[in-house]
Image (cartoon, rainbow, N blue to C red; front, side, top):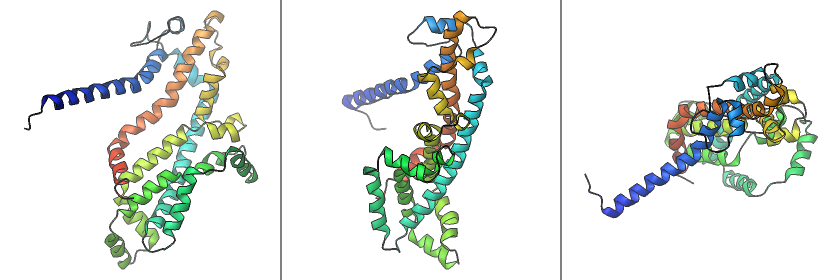
Length: 295
């Protein structure tokens, strides 16, 4: 075992302390909302500041109010559709695009890559974007949320880099055995780059789950709202009256329950995506590192 010097020990202690502080800063907001969502609403309303444990008796009334709201259930189902269909379409387009750009044969690969990279720095702007969606007759449709952001330039570049890292001899062997480009892509390349594929899928799913800006521009029917757009209305517009009109709750307690409902809605919108990450965590660092080895 190599003996550390005093300076190295001090540096290690500083690193651990810094990581601890960063972890607390990142995790405490989630903990604060989680604790407040199961606390007594009157105590939460009257006491502001840091919460380390639930205030008063454990209270799940806020979650009951949220789950009884038909808009929340509709928004949750809409979000599941957007995440599932959007991630599937994005992965399909990204994989076939990355495969085509990663092959060494075509001479137009570099030109297309340069054109794609330009889109990372120069965009048409919000008004042309809206007019394009309008001209395609996508306004107030579910496709207006999925199609405009189907392919992310950065994800395409990372996927292309991972596919390019697959030895060319493997591809040539597959073609000698009679495999075409379609089979080579899905049977040979994708399994060999499964770590990167899993990470890019996570990126697309998280992006689609958190999407609220485009729906606020293109969606006018509340029945098509994703969960995040409903959450925005609850937090910014204070639209919680439909969830706090209960006979068992006095008028003087309405404001406290509205605050409780906000905390509970945030948790309902956050917990599902947090539960997915642990299953893909082992692919996360590996996939990003593989995608950054070669340029």
